[in-house]
Picture 1 (cartoon, one colour):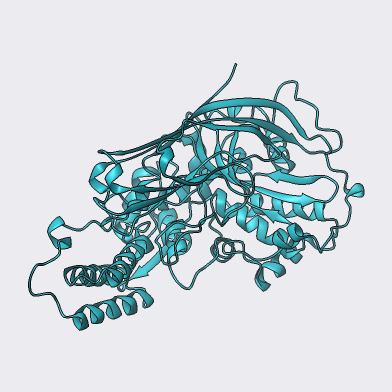
Picture 2 (picture 1 turned 120 degrees about the vertical axis):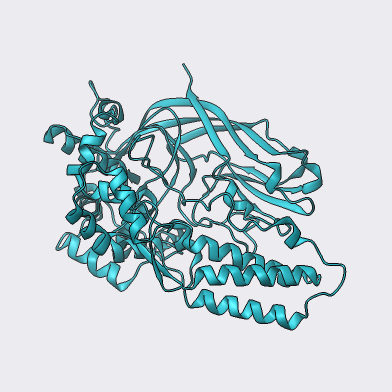
Length: 516
């Protein structure tokens, strides 16, 4: 979910800021089993207990060191079960603060380097009030994207940068086109102007981080059949002999699940899949008078109006939603009011997904945005969904990749809300906010935001219909896996001595192109 502000490479992306490549890596000598003088179990148990106490007290650096020491001792004594517990604890402690690399001085320096003509007053106001921080071992640490988030919240600083780096005419080619296509027939036929995409997904993990023994469990994402994404084809999958489940391309999430013996990998782990799919533009024309009442006993209604791991319906959420919609009772108009509230109230902002997914007690992404005002595409979409659900409007956060900013796919999430009689209506709060990043006529700005309230461009690759969707098999209990979204492969190995799952995001690519 990184946006490089100086270059403004394809942005509006959303999956966790992955753990750095070396996180959790230990010296080779430290993991070899000792032949003599094993450490007493009681000493290792004491270290593990101290590590868990440090983790609970938000002393993440201390916890990481203690977990690592316990891991070494358990490994030396041949206690593989507790060694795995300690290793996973070390990975979690690292992920808790990996997105917070700066102290106050470094955060200020990062802002000064990234923001031209930044005043000291503005910098200090941000660092003292709005910047995201975490405390570990008695030190306040600042979020790595502190400068980028300041820019998004302060368009007077942002627009001079985007003036030469954002092609709004290209980005708005569906929202403000010349000779726009007509909408579907009252929402009955909202899917128009299909684009056929073909391409390849590739995962390449270097040999240096792979275990020498054991099994790699890999959940590999694929395109999903949806109302707006059809005729999915997946061919030429690598390691076919080790496929356990799939390929699955229907349901709520698309993937293929592997169990690959480490001994079967010669050198780097290279996995590919050829993909093809047809994506439709979605144009919904909803007549509020024709909106029908929900069947509140329908299982799908119940699913998408209840709380989930990261879309949390709380009392605070209900109170805010009620304030936003006021006396409005029509669900379509309520969703429109929520959409406008979010894009007018909350500037786009990177969020610490790895930390939020790791630290206990768990804080839902929607609750994090409600409490802090910070949220990127996924967080905004989950917050939108939580507000809708609190009013009894089914809502969800689908996603995968987008090609609206450039031909190269970039990770992204958006939202959908269900209107009886019309179906799942899309909206994209994050793309809508791009209109605020550039100097354009107000009429174009409004047209762009209006389009993304109930329409969606066809430059999407959908992997899942909602966040937190379970796969079969599910992730093992206790495994250190980013559970929110599946935009890159999840990798679990009990034998790995590094946080191998963190590598997948850095070493996974999707290349697609439009067929002529």
